[in-house]
Amino acid sequence: MSAHELRRSVMSALSTVTHPTTGSDVVSAGNVQDLHVDEDGSVTFGFLLRGDDPGDMVKRARETAEDVAGVTSVKVNVQLPQMTPAGSSGGPGGGLKPGSVPAPTPKPGLLGSVGHVVAVSSGKGGVGKSMVASNLAAALALAGHRVGLLDADIYGPNIPLMFGEERRPQVSGAKGSEMIEPLEAHGVRLMSLGFLLDKDQPAIMRGPLIAGILKQFLEQVAWGALDVLVVDMPPGTGDAQLSLVQTIDLDGAVMVTTPQEVSTGDVRRGIKMFERVNTRVLGIVENMAGLACPHCDEVIDVFGTGGGEALAKEMKIDFLGRVPLDPAVREAGDAGRPTVVGAPNSAAALALVGVTDAVQERLGILVPS
Ligand SMILES: Nc1ncnc2c1ncn2[C@@H]1O[C@H](COP(=O)(O)OP(=O)(O)OP(=O)(O)O)[C@@H](O)[C@H]1O
Ligand SMILES: [Mg+2]
Image (cartoon, rainbow, N blue to C red; front, top):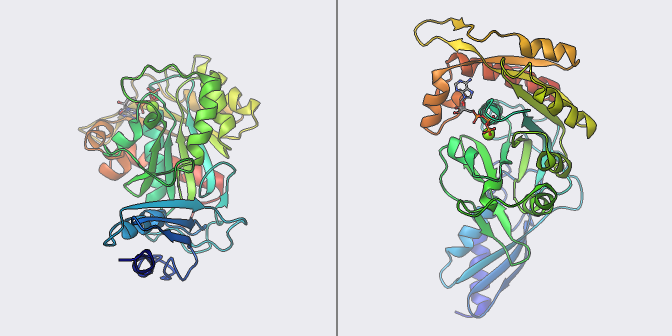
């Protein structure tokens, strides 16, 4: 087959790739640009990523081209529109009335258009940040939003594992303009900075050094259109955290603490770090606040609760809710599911949905049910 004929076959294959809501195909809609086919069967084209992209159009287009007989390789160069996308549609999967949520706007440095970027942070490690971040993301997706979750821990891809995802993300595109496609589970697009490092590679990267690599990495993740991107922050308030906060243009931070940790200065330092870089702290979540009794419906106050709320009052920020220690969290987690998906009726899940409502309210994206 000549290159000319092969080009025609690729073009006609691509015209079967359609947008799930508009129904138009990527060729007539002008997404596919500069399609080039070489004698050796290598295919290159540009893909214009619009604000209403459901997140998998590039992947579907690439896979479709790869399946054409005679094609030996496919390179896709993702391009972003010059202007803010107008009139973006609502999220997939229902729950959202079109127009009820403002269209996502492009964030500098992020590939795709992202409405709100929210960090989940804490003063200390092990207080349940990743648990809150995963459930916030999953509950936002259940509410009908298009959601991404970035695991900002460079020491291992925790979050994808918490979503039962063991694959590594796919990289496509020409050298120098590679693009990383997020994984997807439970309606959430997932990416981890842990993919930057191999397991047995020494973690020598420190704050300022990370910032540059991080920026480049983030610019290459094809999020598509998102209403909310949740960022699970590494613990602490050091260099690494500060450069992260400055690299990602955050709209707000959710601080997680526990009854035991409230009295330490760590959570205050965390809040002050965000205030110093003018990032709005959306509020405090008190996690491991009491034990949800597996035998009755009661929450047993083991260590004393209420410290998170008192601290919020003292620091003049909002209190977003308290989440009890609940065996359902671990059980759902072991099955690779966020609690709100795996054990939606558990005390922890109900509390986490309440926290999610509080976050949506503060971002102005709460859809009345
Ligand atoms: N409310 C809860 N009920 C039961 N288990 C919980 C709860 N919150 C967190 N856990 C468990 O506690 C452990 C620590 O939680 P998680 O990994 O979310 O903390 P983290 O703050 O992200 O930690 P790190 O600082 O190491 O990233 C996990 O095993 C998690 O499943
Ligand atoms: Mg964590």
